[in-house]
Image (tube, rainbow, N blue to C red):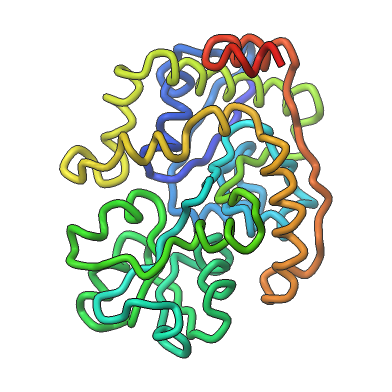
Length: 297
């Protein structure tokens, strides 16, 4: 009997890149049929509260509210090393100028929304659909906004400028990389299937990294698409060797991030860092293909 496994990801190029091989039948799991769902990140955060998905991409800051339902997968993490969501404006140029101003974010909880509060600590944060924030700033609805997904590369084409890279602000203050987004897996699957899911996603990402041209041709149709001309750069930023295996310094970043969220009213508790690692054999095989030096270590 075939078991259906639902994977939810954002309509963006880096997530699509992870799942190119799985969604196109190039990586399979015997006895399992994969079903894919795409939705905006704030919706995935909220729908995961109802355990709608077996695997879901979520904002890292949403995990404390989901920890009783989901575990963190060691594959598929979006990591910013000195970069991340970008705060942009049409009129203002510094964080100081934006204190008390209206800042559009893709949602609460999202990592970009948290970072706006973290960087400014005195602003009015307002939810707005992520791919409409730039136009809303141009129209004067907001003083500034946080760009996520491909919008963090596309905003100059809207006549906006960068006030600050909030991922860089995080790293300057913590000396740690920014865990932007996580892949999580439903606890109800059981240990064996959770680890099988981790292995399949790792194999899918590894296939994309080692068959880059064909995976890019498919994945860059997502997000802003070919006209946006930023999909490949975005994939390089957020679908890379850090995404293959959650690094130790990013795990430390999560341990620093989660307690902070309580102070901003985003989380009620600090969850355990509960990670599904997948099999060591699949990990080493994947690393040997894309990063031989890491596999040897």
